[in-house]
Length: 380
Image (cartoon, rainbow, N blue to C red; front, top):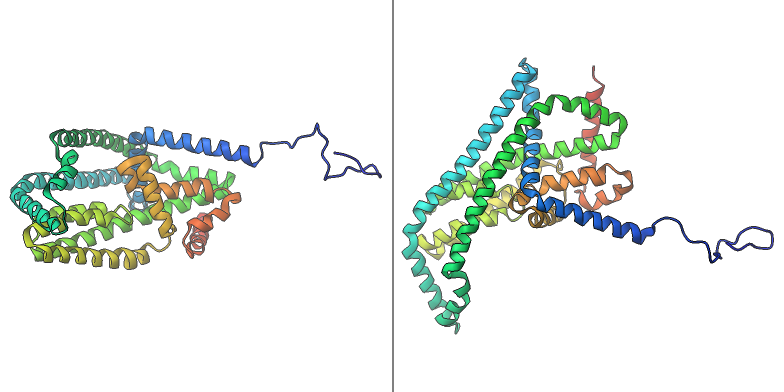
């Protein structure tokens, strides 16, 4: 810098040979964005391995209370681990069995409604003709969708996805086995982290609490919603009511838009068998049940343990679906919780960002849980 008359340097005047040190904001931003996209590319490329392993981690975290309960009941630690592993295996078998049964029944029953599909198609053409849309225009629009090549390609795509699902299930089972037997060492590792990185330990504790609350509550309310949907479909006489109940249970794990995915097939079959009135009733019942259960009752039970705002939840669904596919949609909330815990909550410099991600009163509830964990850790 240049000097003033008294020999001091003028901070406003820079000598030509002096340059600011460090990368600067622009350099840090470019490098951070490049690293961010490299990580996303890695997750997307290896999602068939990462997502099943992360799902296994979620299931093991959700099963932690069961292991503690068994150990308090006097069961040896190794016995509690085996029981937890068997329970998780049974849950997977039950879920996969329900999906296979639903697909089997649907594949057997749907061809019986081919004539009704044709009638609905003809009625749709007649309805569109009243607006000046000819059958030739509709056929031209659907030519690329309904030609044999497209159908064969769709079948091959489904077969490939089923094959990939088998590989992901194998990874899930293997990861579950190893993670369950790692459970006894979690407490000691958490104590070491708490001594060296207390903020990181607290962030991981909040992530664990959020995952447990999310999966347990989503499962319970998914069962409740599925039962209510099945009862309504049986009353209306909609075919394959139990199949659509299984679909409603599975899609309940997909936030925000899951019920829409579970609504379309039963509404379509209600339209085929009972006409527009039954289809409207299905839409109304599904909307009322899901609005009341998922928008008013379920959040009260979940509380703010998950702590994400509705907009962040929806954006995370879209983001992780693009990055990791179907499993990314199911794991959207836990994945966002993991990113928030490791990159936001664990770094005091980014605590301001948590304000935009977290529900209004989630911070106070998290502080209460933190105090409870500290009291539990101080007990002899």
